[in-house]
Length: 349
Image 1 (cartoon, rainbow, N blue to C red):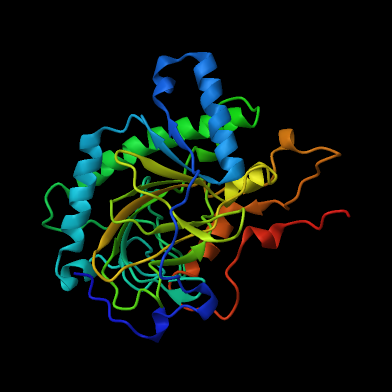
Image 2: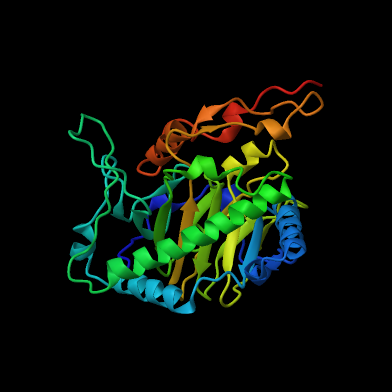
């Protein structure tokens, strides 16, 4: 299962290769969201403060008591395993391309190095199909494998539940920044959220390759479910070293993305992370990328800037930014991938 064969395209530069052992990340907050159900204002404010502190100090946190039914998660993980167990030709029947970037893929690149993984991508909300497809136009239409009973239903159920959780987290983020709870909702009226199934097969050279190279997520929030194999590493801000995010049953891992970093004018920082692989066991994970609408303009929020704290970023189009980021997934580019740092303004000294 996986069908990957080690070659030079997977080899990381020496400075980015994983060390033989990675310490467990101590101190990543574990936040229980169950007080949200009570509607108690003081309890919600306390949760918002926890989310704010975690976003400042780590850019990562884990949540339990999140309200996503265990059965919904179980059906999604069963569907994931069933898909990746299909023969290569069945998976290839729903293979994605640059023009139709949803479906199966096994040659993704991060930072211009191929990742040791295979993926299946979906969008949570398919945009209306164009009346006619112009040359070079990208079409976001989900591809569903045939003869895989319950696959579509399980993943649509899961994406719906994750969207509800995403909006709860978005409101907590807004509260943590002393904004009204629905302040960020307007950016998500027609979200470009996408959902991914990841399979990381056992790797013969885990000292040379990575499941996903070092990167930051460009969107607002990522909600990740991972199995108990482990492999998600986050770069500690205290010393710049990589630390392994431990598996916590019935939890999701949340990380704030570049969009929140810009909105917050650097109060919160998108954390750099990667995925390590191993020789013995396959790893499965399901990231849900909560992204703004195509026409959203991303810039520091007006409530969070002023004379003493001017905007640190120029405004940019989310749609254009995201399309450019996606184009780097398919092949090795001759230039650096687009980052939010390219929009950073020169600060007065």
